[in-house]
Image 1: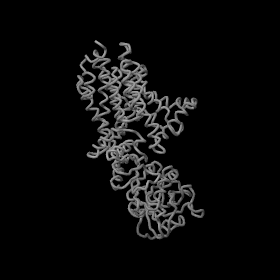
Image 2: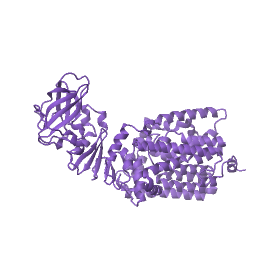
Image 3: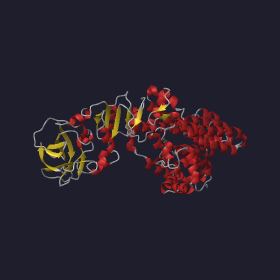
Image 4: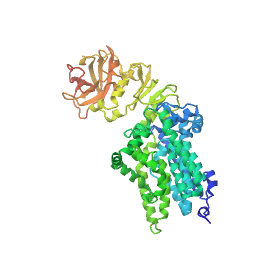
Length: 607
């Protein structure tokens, strides 16, 4: 009996039959239950993050819009401004998008990812069964599912490369069984998911050709097809149809402006490349990758050869997320890490296998718990704020919005990331959550984000129609003095105005009993500089700095005779009835040289 026949004698179905049925006829009935539980858990986590607006990257929105567009014959991706064939080739998105038009694109993508990616346990279980019998089948399945970085990827975003985990795992099993035809089918499955992953199948085909001369012809065909497919994308489609600045610039910009330029720079600057690779964060990345499974994978380097392109790309990249073990950039390597651990475990002395299993289990558990943020799967205060803003956006208009809102807006013709720049859309969502972090500090008005927001609030042709502590929704053509800004206008109030600057005076201040907030009454004498902010508190130069009108109404839209209110917090330790109020601009100086640093306002108490 040959090795393959012996491996199938333990009760698993033959490879060809189980491949056709995705392993569902496995004699290990519990694997089907495990798959159902895992798929449900992944979908529940993924949908929980999406439903509660806890997605932090733009990949879910990016691929949802791509799938939705492709299903309608639209090859233009508005998020990055490029033809989709210049971004990635993912034919699997077309059928998913067609189904998504019936029941919701995001929901279909998340369900497909949950079912397909977790189904990789079947070929990995069969590999384990070939090596160790039924116990090996469970080892292969569980090692894959509990690998620390996998669950955050499957629940935190969608990526076609994650769907490729199943055909990649099928390819590993085919390689082990020296089945070139099985590797060819696996390669076709990978090609349907994402073109750059064919670098992996190209190496697998060469390895199989070397390992089994009888399969050399088919293996070389697989290698050639994989290499040509990748080359067509890298050297023809991407340069011709890709964005001016895309992922190539984000990852390899310091190395070169094109694929050829990057390769040439790497070859001609070996010392610079070595210094980059030996940086502490990259060495720690390798530790985080191999520590799960107790470093067993390193004892079978042969099975890590196919994913050398994955590690090379991640380690050479300048993009911070590329060297995170819980990001999708590592996902294609996980089946190979599991396979390498299985083969390594076979070589562990029988007296040490229990120790090796304990070390692998503990290291995997520690890694798994360190990557989980369970609060992301549940509703929070931020969820309600996000829903409030998205509900106020017209479903027909072009919109620019932050990453966490984009998946909920993906099914529309025109969709862009939050500004800058201005893409000419009818709605713009400005993220302002950072204001809570800097509240009361002068550094707020000089953050990277605040000047952008204040410039937009002062732009002609836009008005704030909804606002909360996390977002401001602007609509093109809306009155900047109405909508969310209308609540700051009030009736005239008796009181002696005190000049703060030429365009604004203060006429009074009221604090409710027991409150640490004060309402200022202001009178406008004309438009003010759009970057005006308020000093409030005590002393000659009050240290607390806040935005006028909650940072929603731009001072640039004030008119002569406007009576306004503006609510502000008082500094800790404030006592007495004399409140000091002044103005400053983004530079930290007074609006005009002759303006007072601050004036004293009598603080009234209200019941």
